[in-house]
Length: 605
Image (cartoon, rainbow, N blue to C red; front, side, top):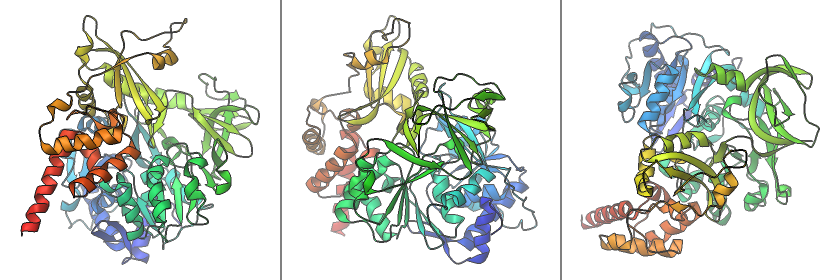
């Protein structure tokens, strides 16, 4: 194949193996021939509507085959896709559509209706099939492939614009290390709004393989996902380390599916000791740690992990992909003028990682100042190039080791979160004067903890309950950005230099926001039964009907134990995804009662 542009590569497989399965999602199956035919029909409809080459078009669809048709169709029309997760707050999605200048949003009929005020909606399954005469543009490596929004430090998400050339070369460069072919089956575990999905979707479809779209429910339920790996013959699984840790008891305890060849880790730091059980199984599956960021097109390094790494304390990220150049510079370096000469730090010393090469993104949409700050034309260590300043601290020697972040951006469950964006959202709430958010890692695991000061003249009660704050934030931020705890402080501590004293803040005896009730507010027998199980698992009482599981000590491992006990006690299966969707006693109790009623009705027939 001569082309390295994703839409052309996929279209070539539509000619070579039209009957081969390209995409599956539960009971839905789509062949390469049908995928390309449907995508081209959508592309012609978009061109007929006036979509221009290089324009941004939104895609808001559930995790079904129509999602892939929509993404490919947008690219075949010469446009760039803007992925919009229908599970994210509508206000946030509208901002992205407007900020990216998207005149059209492709929807699947079950999502995206709320965006009709922001853009014209095009339903993927209802496009005109009589436009065969419409000529599709030739897509080149310099054209825009997609715009993916990431958390912004000022409270405003920022769109990263990535060109086709950066995407197309990714698979060849990673393929120098990891082998795959048209015989492989890839899982697409992640939301399309997370750039890991770029690797999962197009890695499979540019090589003639099959991609299995994992439902949101199965992605939140390690038991279901472990079963899916075997039932769907997955050979290539890509996960964040957090997701793998939840999956580990099932992979190690119950056996790794025989077909699983590669596990690719990305999105957050990993230490080999955390996954020792998997690494010590033997040759299958091979486990890879691929460091990367959205601004450098998903993956930037490769490092295979093995049992020999288990005793190491660090997080080795390996070596750069062959078409990228890494340099490590002084972490305290300020703004850099164009053409500046910058020195590298000595080997073995930690510093900020800068990256240049074919994978570097075009920049940020409508953010020229930020683009100029983060994408720098400079001569570093004698190498002239356009460098992306990652904000990541690394140490370099024979390979690179990830140390941590240099700014207020953190990683949680694979997502990069700008704490400033969460703080800005909190500070906008009535009754809150100021807010600080920290990533804490204690016995309950890593989580976001917020500290707020009440507005002048208002008491602590003006902030509301924990549930009030989380519900208010959920209309503005996606779930992974919601703080697990919110505490009230009279004032924020400062250093002698007048800067926020974060160490003192974390050590303060802050007053956590109250929850809405105690165990005396439990209404039904099911709620009282569930409260007893929660109390046993969490080791605390009383449990109120509106207490949020993940803010009163619950974590992913306790959640697994909880749903297993509930399932055994009530006599119907409660999945981990059910708990995520119904995280209070009141919500879960109603779900259990409805499930038992449905089960009884089925038995009576």
